[in-house]
Image (cartoon, rainbow, N blue to C red):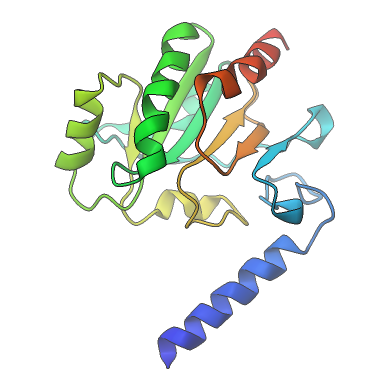
Length: 189
């Protein structure tokens, strides 16, 4: 009974978070994710962009801390993934292509969720020669900073401009060709 009540309360909170604004970003100075009409691809233009909260967490590969804010001045592609996720398995090599092509101007950062032991996602990345860093966050605590973001959506990708503001959100798996035009535009800004 308690689980049912918690699920209903969670659904109400999610619905209320999504109904606070007509736009994809709520008025104010902080980024609050809203998906108007259930869109899976959302872009934000200049004045509509809001800063992404500084997401930090332990590296999947070692005990170092990864901070998204450390990459200001570069376009950041923040990808929420898990090695257990079928679409993530297809998307990860595509993200590596983007990292390789734009290493000087862009940084891909993963957030590995729902992998309770490090070995499987570490092997997954090693087997695919993935070099970009990932935050290791099995319970998804890092994502709590993303107000309004439905944490059950995996994969998801947020693209930040060089000032750390959210320029796009994708609630689906991506190919390199989906990201390249956006990165080209943001790099030129």
